[in-house]
Image (cartoon, rainbow, N blue to C red):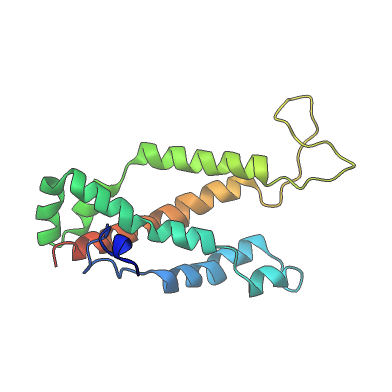
Length: 166
């Protein structure tokens, strides 16, 4: 590591090791893949998980937690000292922001997840255009974020915060 990157430490050292990768892989193989694949047909998805970017996104919760902590340490310190997970969950939760994220990823899945072919026009969102064929139903992506990605990210945030004062 070069000198400039070592001076730019963002995460609190004792808390930087928070890692939920085992939980993520378990959820991926046991709960998510069965919703997206048919055994024997989609073996590439089963052998090469495509949630790498989601794993990174979930672990970004450590950085999100640090920003929230620095913004309002007076709110977080009592809950951290009391190891009060319920209070920490309330502090890290913004239902309106979560809804925005879910709608945004649903829209991205609709726009970028179309199965584009040369013999059928792409869905432009215009009511006169033909119905798009999606690689993954955008509503499934919405639920994926609401049921797994956001909750796991908040778990990372809470685990990080619980170690923040160590």
